[in-house]
Image: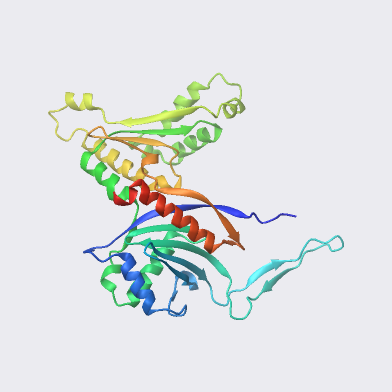
Length: 334
C-alpha cells in the first residue's frame, strides 16, 4: 500500500509589490494595519471565482522581519467523493459522497506568502499566484484604500530590470538550447503543418525540421535518434547587421526584424520562470548577455506534508530562510 511522502518539493518565488504613486508607504504597512482592523477569519473571508471563497487562515507577525500569511480556498458546503478499499470478496468498490464535518469545509488548496516592506515571497500549494493577489486586493479594498488596488501588482525582477534593458538597448540575437529527440521532430513537423501562415512570416520550424532530418538521415529508425537524445542543438536568431548596412539607404529595412527580436525576447523572459524555456541567452544591442539563471529568482525546497497540503510551520521556516538568503545576496536591493 502506498504511503504519503513525508515532504514535497515546492517552489518559492520572489516578487516585488508595485502600484502607482507608491510613495513611502509599503505593502507590509498596509497589510499590517488591515489585519489589525480585521482580526477574525470571517472578516478575512471573501468571495472568489466559481463559487469559491478565499480566506486568510493564518496571519503571523515575525518580529521586525515581516508578516506570514496562509491563504486557503474552499467551496462552502461542497462534498467530496470516497471509494471503498479493495476487497478479496467483493466484485465492486463503492463510491460515496461525503459531507465535511460540521464547522468545516474541504480545502481546495492554499498558498503561503511572506511580506517584508515591498518584498514578497510566495509558496503555492494548490493555489495560483493570482489567488494571493486577489486576497491582498480584497483586504486592502475593505480598508477603503481602493486607489491602490487599481494598479497593484506583484512583479518579477525580470519585469522591473531586464525587460526595461531589452526595450532600451534592443536585441542583437537570441540563442535557445534544447534537447534533440524524437518528440522534437514530431512537434516541429506538427507545428509546421498547423501554422503555415506563421511559418511564412518567420520560417524557423521548417528550417529546423529539415536540418535535424538531414543530420540523422542515415539512421535506420527514430529509435536511433531517441538513443542520442543527450545531444543538444543551439538555435540562434540574430539581426543581420551586415545586410542592414548594405541596405542603409532604406531607413525601414530591418525595422520589423528588430521589433520581432525585442518582442520575442520579452516573451522568453516573462515565461522563463515556469520552465517554458530550457535555456537561453539574449544579447542586447549594447552586447549585454542575459541568461536564464540571471532572471529566475526562485528556489525549490522540501516542505513537510500535512494531508494534501504542507505543514505551515515548516513552510514559514523555509520561506524565512529563503528571504534571508535573498537579503544576504543583495537581490532585494536591486
